[in-house]
Length: 168
Length: 168
DNA sequence: GACGGGATCGCCGGGATAATTA
DNA sequence: TCTAATTATCCCGGCGATCCCG
Image 1 (cartoon, each protein chain N blue to C red):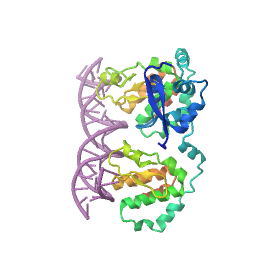
Image 2: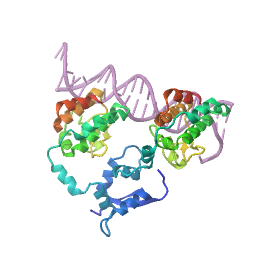
Image 3: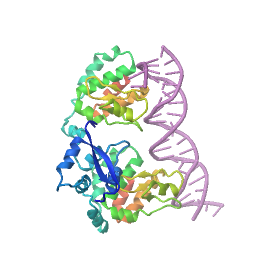
Image 4: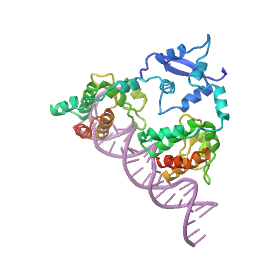
């Protein structure tokens, strides 16, 4: 809705027509249409943020069942994929749980700079579909650890936590 | 993938960041990201869904048997010839397998420009009998590699993949 | 961007292991 | 000091693209 700070993006013609065909009222902006199509409008997001219990288990369980991790080449890829699924399953829970940290390093932040500032060569990466970044320069054991701590703080059951973290 | 007929739309900054955060790989276009988020069929996806099994083995096997590669002077010529045969044997399979890429470069595209944009001095060449272009500035090992990856993604058996890639 | 082919070598990402600190 | 936890250096293998050679 805010017209300040509009950004320009390019879309192919077919996609453009698809967006245009979803106009609900005369003069509706591309932003508004996209927000509706992406189920992203601010109100929905705010509502979700307040929503407490995760109805946990769905997204990650599916992920395990569908064997999505097998597609990923490396431990880092599997780690990143799990985090992306966890975030999307419960953004608010993720937000609260993401303050876990090590002795000097912080593991999650909403900017690359914050992670770089709290350690050397942490190799931060953005978590797809979320505003968060994670540290990446750790051995596989610690990656499992981070996932386990995060999931515990988000309220997942032990068995599931175990299975997910071992699948990295 | 087609870059023709791009349209420009304006989105607010928050939406822009949301779209950007869903990037799957370096250089991915806004169109591609949005298509994924909106669950619109990508052409490659549509192709994959329709494509039955490859009926693999025919064209390339013949090629090997007929010793067609012996006619080619250079590794590049043999590389290009194999790609041409692979495409004609299974265009849809080729289309969906052709998204393999390196750390920075993309290996296949439907335009010379796309390949030039994703690396330096990649020396793209058009694949005969197809709408595709490949990168050519690689050592022979990598050419073998590219063929092997491509054939694997197209569903060819290991033994055949081995024989074809070694014949470069 | 106009010589083409492609080996060689430098660079980078992944992540185990060595170093450090509680 | 000894151990356990955490950090981050550094090695290895893979990729890119410069540059040499025919």
